[in-house]
Image 1 (cartoon, protein in one colour):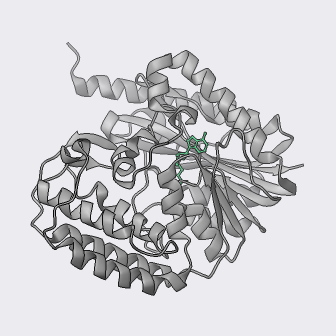
Image 2 (cartoon, protein in one colour):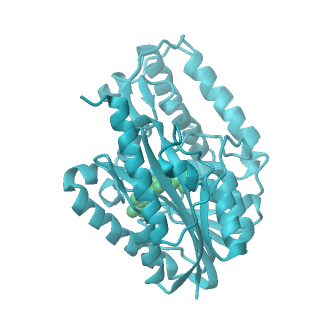
Image 3 (spheres, protein in one colour):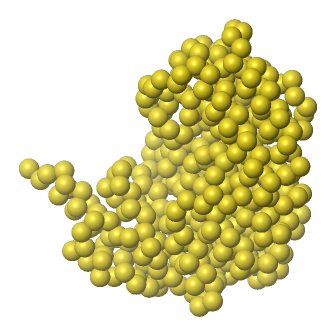
Length: 406
Ligand SMILES: C[S@@+](CC[C@H](N)C(=O)[O-])C[C@H]1O[C@@H](n2cnc3c(N)ncnc32)[C@H](O)[C@@H]1O
């Protein structure tokens, strides 16, 4: 019987052969060809970026896609968000494309922060209430740093007083009792502060909700028990608020506009020169349900999960073929909606990764390029990079496509 290891190797070689075919059909150069022969041990390096198109722009997109590693600039490291864009990737694309910036899947707000740091007007939207909370916090005015720290210090002191508060039963399952009590007191205290800093306090609160719970991580519902000494949850809240305050002080005063919207039906409200975004990859995450613990704590009753694009659950429920068709239709729909307010000569940059459904790769480059072309967008350049998926022993490909409004 073939071992698990040899099965994995066979599967990987098959994926690499498919990758070579895909690249060939798009006329993409495979600079890392040798390593895809199957003889290369271990996954291909993430830096193996293949590029195509206008030499100036293809160099930029290839360089942007190759960016890796942690970045602590400005507010980027405040609050985790699944599948965030690399800040340096956003920075390079923004530098290459002048004017106002919009991100219709703004998530944790990476593009918006980089746009502001580059001195641009920025707007962003998302379906997820947590994405909106985090993006707004990361782009808040530096003038709120001091009131935020002062409020957080008082809240943390109050949260250590042993006054019992009511905690939802569903929440109690995920915390040690004293941790749930400290969180409950923080939540209640936040309501007593002025409306201008409440969203920031809630964002800080949100940033510790998963960390202090038994949930393994933001993207996993697995339980992992641990012990948090009494009082440390309140201290963590205060520490996170101080961190955010410090980060905000390095942000420019700004007028970022961030709103709730389904990207398929609502685009930017005013004309924009650059749309830079990363939509959900097919079948990879359930962005909205992943935030269930935060919804419960923050009293968010309504999250538009039904309108989420490419969710993992839709691939399970509909099956690969129908879910993929749905994802392709949605891709056409959101790209079409977003191009309406793009100025002539304006740029549209999309980062999208191949999904992995039922162990098989789902190509995202072709539908994305076709959707752009169908909206009178000229593809200037594109790049593709291998992303080793160690958990599944597979290789996925991420693409960055840059198009221009004709
Ligand atoms: C890949 S993430 C974006 C991450 C972001 N670029 C960042 O750096 O944090 C995709 C986002 O799409 C959002 N989303 C999913 N379906 C949507 C829809 N129909 N309209 C708007 N946003 C949607 C999810 O809530 C998620 O925040």
